[in-house]
Length: 128
Image (cartoon, rainbow, N blue to C red):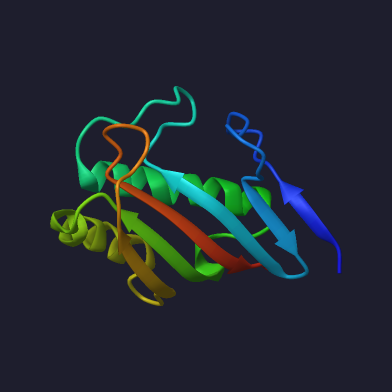
């Protein structure tokens, strides 16, 4: 099986020895994405809703570069800074995935960089 490192031209290079996504056969494994604007590298203004929107848009951009999209996501792992942000994140998640949601795990833990409230990683399949 061919394993390919995927990078979106719309994102800055990763900050470590990893790929934005890896495609293995028809599966795409996206690295965790936070609420940072890829154009500036800074967290978007606002709170959990805004950062959740941006994290999902970041996943969407990477998935598109890998030949997929949000409708082909089968699993999402959400990392929350604190459980008090669950309701806000969950509402945004429903906006993007409400009709046919993927499986999901949500874990609480300190986020990096400072001020990050959420990060999400995803597993998807290709469109073809």
